[in-house]
Length: 66
Image (cartoon, rainbow, N blue to C red; front, top):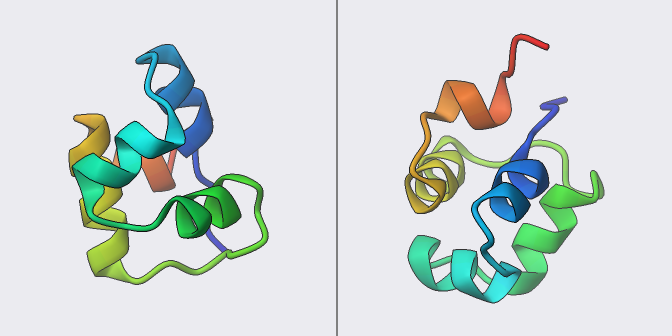
């Protein structure tokens, strides 16, 4: 299971799910499922797209130290 910081980073950057969807090329529904822990194991490709959309590394978004 991957614990992620998608929502906290997205909110801090003042992005909506729609904004992140456009930047990442992933659906709003999929991003919402990940943010809410319903989908727990995104593909490496999806992690890269989300991280890039947030301007962060995959490590920072999906494998935070804290």
